[in-house]
Length: 184
Image (cartoon, rainbow, N blue to C red; front, side, top):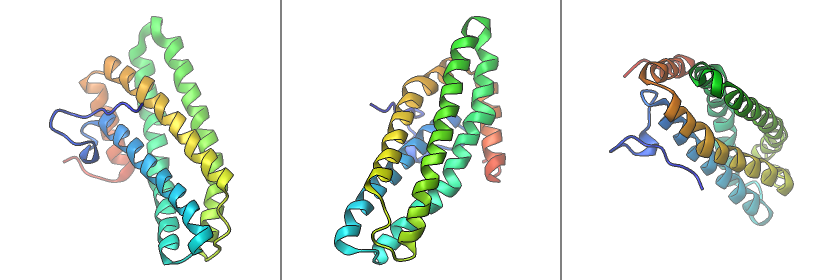
């Protein structure tokens, strides 16, 4: 079950860096949507081949995971995780360190899976309707689902409890800087 963090009156898909935890959660929803696209693409290719719709889907997934996913991992590793470690205090530091290290390991594993999938999607984009492996798609989608479940169930609720407004503002500012966007 995925926790849906949202500000009162704010839809998840309109989350901004002004509410960094909500933005991270919204990104999880977009990752899940991209994984759904991958599964539909995998089912489409044996019947329809690498037609225009398949090529467009492959391009969209490539674009998303080349741009947004690296920002998301950096948001967490460079900004959110250190803020949590600072806020945890002596009593909670070990547990927070264990969680964040485990999530960083997940990121590296997801990135390795992505490299395999990326090469296959590039071949689909280039017209190879047999390039997408069922095993690779399922491994990637399932690994992301488990990772998102941990972040939604453990990380974001913990961050919501531990981080104050100033820490969240710093995380949001770093997210904006990483993306080259100005404060609204």
